Length: 397
Image (cartoon, rainbow, N blue to C red):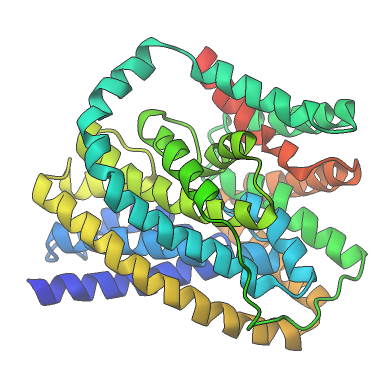
């Protein structure tokens, strides 16, 4: 049995590399395929092995997903904010360091998860019931949104960006389209940036591999540990939104923010399995897949999940460093404009396949919305209105 579990973990890691590197191929899609095949082609494989596969794939995906997000500007839910400081570091020759900061944050996030899972389990049900009875979350999110706008020099334009992206997100997320975040986030934060890079004929110079970047880890880690548990108790709140909330209080610089973003992303994924175990609630597509295969995890299976998270996380940390170096070799030898064009075409094709013709239309609209919002000269984080407005209304209505 141990050999089979190790094999499932390793295969899941390989699958996570694939889903992480290929923009638009999301772990939710692979998880749904595994669940559907579990009653046919995979019916002879014990569900516990498929569960280990999904957990390992999910953790690896979080690590690896920052590579295309930072190097190509092709984000998924959770990594969209890394496009901003990560791409700036890439243009300065520090793309490898940007990825390393996120993967290091992910690794520290796993250690935080191991340390605080037990204390959280003691208070989880009480906090969850309290969060249901006291509706403070929309007030908090409204305050965060207002602060995003008010700290800008061009306050009206910042409000305009928040409102436009918010209305777009509200529309896209409520029309019943399959995988709506794919065209929405990719358009606003990814393809829009790539189109501007093509327009400006952006050139990516030689990247520095050996330069070490020193940052203070205490503040980002404390922020991650305090903010990430929100994902356990609150539905419809993403790791990107948690990062925005955390940064409003911590005021991190760009490098600290990337480190925190990696930590929050991995904690949000890991905590989704803890939420399933403690509260019988699913917070991610991966947790939904686990519940479909095995139901609510027993104590022994959750310990196996935690062990899988730890082992696959350590493996993924070294894999992210190795793959980002290989990625940079290709990036330095290839015209960046051609890479952007090829990436846009690949994303468009994947969006058409996954979300249909209407999804492709949403990608086009989101891209031009992103280009317009960026042209207004305010902080791109205001485009997080595409998710914040939806979440605020979710709790108010």
